[in-house]
Image (cartoon, rainbow, N blue to C red; front, top):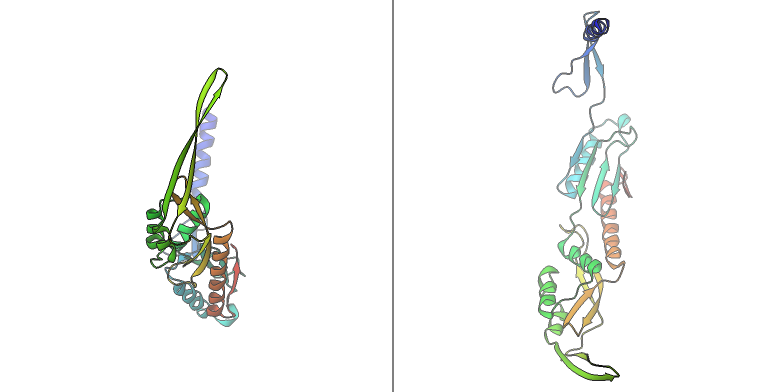
Length: 259
């Protein structure tokens, strides 16, 4: 037991007498190693940790990346690439040297498009007044003709009861017949033009929606068919891709995907 304890203390002394790192605060490019045997301080250069910048606008994204390239001399200019996804544009500033320095901009999804995407996923129906409010306020389309068309809907419901008599039992069955009457015909589908992204990043897109009528419940829904919102978002991304390519010119290539 005593032998092991002495060995442990000896090892601690040897470890303490070995080289020690003395990193100075604020120096991101060098490490300093103190060697107690030679009583010397060695400076070891190293790459600083990667920096991940976040831009608040797409203009700041491109301006920063171009300024970074211009700050380098022609013989040391890094090959930067831009990756574009439905939610983010990210520029890797030095792709050749495998550095992880980057600047990113989160693409803000417009609330109108988010509403339509939720309608596509959940497929709800609404009372006419609620649906009119959704089109007018949530989608920002106060002049859409569907608002007046559903405002004039009159639900007609009738109940027919039939008596069924069988040996040993008697039951009453009822059947509800419902229909919609309106002064204006409700279309089977409508087209809604809304922005996909905020801040005018891309032109507004027209999204086709099917009109679903539940006469028995007295409700109406507008539902984009499967893939319709994805098509609109792809069209908006294609515009952003082209806009980024024009701004960055031939200096930074834009790709769809992630690094």
